[in-house]
Image (cartoon, rainbow, N blue to C red; front, side):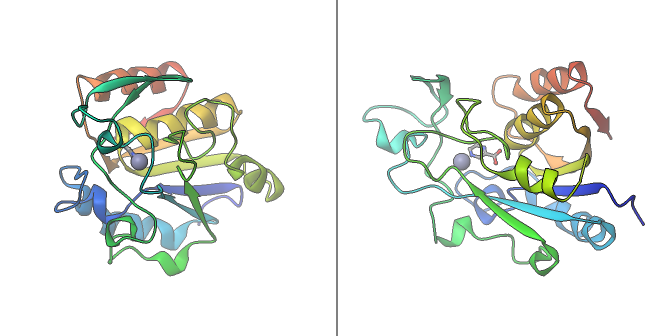
Length: 202
Ligand code: VGL
Ligand code: ZN
């Protein structure tokens, strides 16, 4: 058994991030059996779900002439424009069918405000608008976090960096993550996580 103050945060294991999905991450589905085994032992399990309205500002389709995976400038800084993905209530936004969703204590949805993206499970991309997860974990007295899921270099890394900044002891199970790796993003985010004191468990 894990110590009672450990929480497992499973990031965005949704159909659109798995092979065949709208923003497929190579091997995204391969981590599901390992995640299910980890969840079985965890003192607390939180699942996050990317959950965008159709008019979401992170979708290239909502920026006439913009190509998917190009960069734009938002009020809060640079933002990648993604293929339309994880639209609220769609099949792509559903969890991978083999993920043991019944084991979750909390399902946290993020990215539902049309004008702002939310990679991190803690703060939206302005780094100030809170999702409420910190309050939940604090109320339960959970100080040590294990993170896994999709994608390593976006939602997992941003969550890990925010968690470290908030004072949690953070481990990322790299073997139970898969990356998008856009323009060197994986190497960059690995380095940022290490510099922030996040333990990367290969
Ligand atoms: C994610 C890009 C856009 C992720 C979510 O889950 O890593 N990446 N939305
Ligand atoms: Zn998204």
